[in-house]
Length: 295
Image (cartoon, rainbow, N blue to C red; front, top):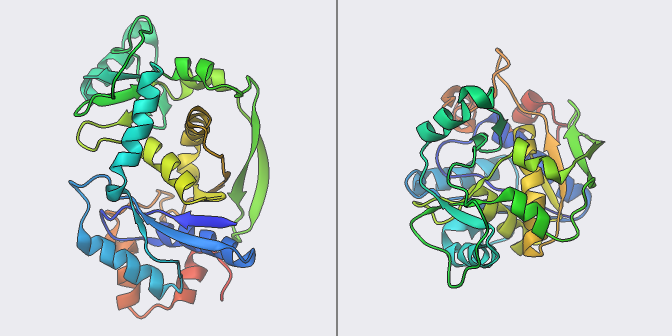
C-alpha cells in the first residue's frame, strides 16, 4: 500500500489536515507500506516557502515520516502539459473565457432552474463549449482556461461502463475504515460535474489534472482525503481512464468540524497545529482531539 498526504503551502495546517495525514500514515504503517508527502504548490500566487517549511515541521512533530525527495507540483508543469496536449488532440478540451460572474449569471437563468453545484462549484453551463467537435493538431494553447468536454470524454474514454461501480470508504469516528459501495453512472457527469477546468490560464494546470497525474507518477494505491472531495472522484476516475492511468482505491473520511459543525479552513488559525504546539499539546493530544487511537 502506498498512501500520500498532499497539502498546499498556502496557510497553516489545522486539525483537519492532521487527521487526514495521520489516517493516511497509519494505513500505510499498518500494511507495512509507504506514506508519501507531496506539496501541491501549483498556485504560485499564494504558495509561500514559509508555509511549506511549517508543513514539514508540523508533520514531523506529529511523528510522520516519508521518503525524500518530496514531489512538488511546481516542478511538474511539463507532465501536465503533455497530458493536456493528449486530450486536446482528441478534441476533448476547449478554451473558456467565462469568469465566475458569467457562470453564475448563465447558470441562474430562469429557464435553467436552480444552478447545480459540482466539484468546481456551480456546474458550468457550457457557454464556451463548441457546437460540434473539430479535429485539431499541434499543442494545446497556453495562457487560456481549458475545460474538459465531459460528455465527449465519457463517450471517448473506452472501457468506462454505463453502470460502473467502485468502492469508496468513509472513516468511522474511531478512524477505522468502513467500506461503502457506491454505484455511479458516468453519463450523469454532465449534470453533476459539468465541464471541469483542467488548466487555469495563470497556473497551466488545475487540481483535477495535477492530482490524477501525480498520483499515478507516485504509484499511489490508496488515496485518503476528505468527504468534501467525494464529488471530484468520478471526474478523476474518468481522467484516469482517458489518460490510461491506474485507478487507486479511494478513502473519503469524515471532516473535522468546529463547535458549530462548520468544516475547518486555513483561515481558522485557532485550530492551527502550530498554536497547539505553542500551548504545550502533544501529538497524542492531537490524536485524541480528532478521534484517532493513541500511539
